[in-house]
Image (cartoon, rainbow, N blue to C red):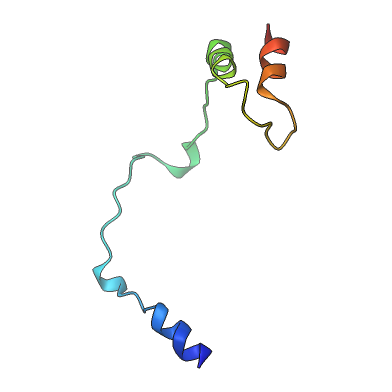
Length: 71
């Protein structure tokens, strides 16, 4: 009975009718993300835009500490 119920929830997808994927990157795969420029001003602006009342991330660091330590 459970098998019949779960089978009714899921269907087999017709892959013949899948839409075409539009590639955004038109270059060789070997040069994808080979150069990433991160400016200190961008990091500063992101840190300063953090809300003090938010919970810390996985690292346990609260936004207020990041702000004060960056200044």
